[in-house]
Image (cartoon, rainbow, N blue to C red; front, side):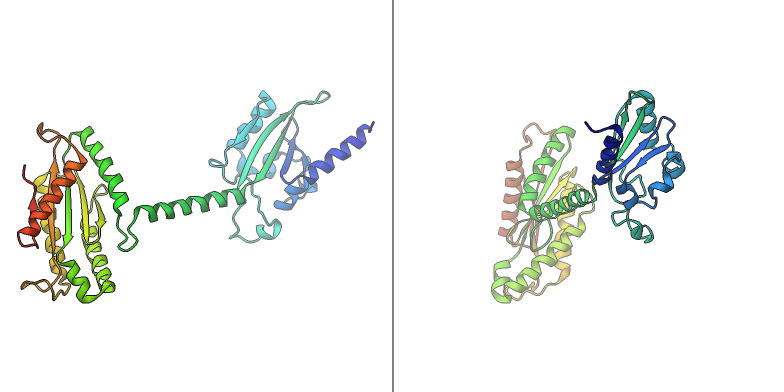
Amino acid sequence: MPDAVHRLSLLESIIGAVNLGAIVLDETGRIVLWNQWMSRHSAWSADAVLGRDFFEVFPELQHKRIDSAIRQALRDNFQSLLSQTLHKAPFALYTHGAAAIENAAQERMQQAIAVTPINLSDSPRHCLIQINDVTIAVGREKLLREQTMVLRSQTFSDGLTGIANRRHFDVAIEREMRRAMRNSSPLSLLMIDIDHFKDYNDHYGHQQGDGCLIQVAAELAAMLQRPTDLLARYGGEEFAAILPDSDAAQALQMAEAMRQRVAELRIPHEKTGNDLKHITVSIGVATQHTHLPHQPLDIAALIGGADRALYLAKRSGRNRVTVQTT
């Protein structure tokens, strides 16, 4: 049976070997144990801190969450876990130790901290402060979040034009339809088609055709200033603009402004079959109102109405705006 001295020596060796910070405070808040990990990742050696008041060594932690956690452990026998999200790096600890401390640009290690009461049979209550380095885990989480955002952007963005894609449109039109029903507000949709685009591609080539799509999409998207408005590439050379809280008159005004903006780009197009030798668009407009009993809110009906209006604009000579009539 090992004697008490041997057991104490073994315990100190174990605490010194573990890959986490360990600080033990006595009932007065003085440091009675400071393991090798703490010496390695801080500016303090054990000889420099043993016997000193904890907040003399770490004055910046007084009146912070760690302060109340220590008092709760010593006074109330209560364990505390400090959330890494709320308390990212309270201790001045650095992954690469003293060399990093001298480098002012070095960031502190991210820390997960537990404060645990220690009840000894032959002495007053102590408390143990455990510090885990979670820098790598936090870095991985950050990278995962960034990759998720990139993937989400790729999933909901058109690869060519950078605006919303058809999947994004489907999600947005459903969301805005529900919102319109809740708020009894109008919802308008514009279906926008580049006139004679097949002829443009055949004459100028697909690379220039892609450039035309990119330029038109950028101009149309720039016209939508409200955060709830959305321009999406619906398919091929067709775009769709969702305009929440816009009645028929407001939607018509926006559609006509878009038609004029594209015409003003003066993108050359020799194969239009008419006197206009530049790119134009045709636009169909549809609006749904919750206060009209004969026109219940329905996504398919809204899209169908805008499609029919677009078809009529094409049939009527192109480069024009047509509004759905009921």
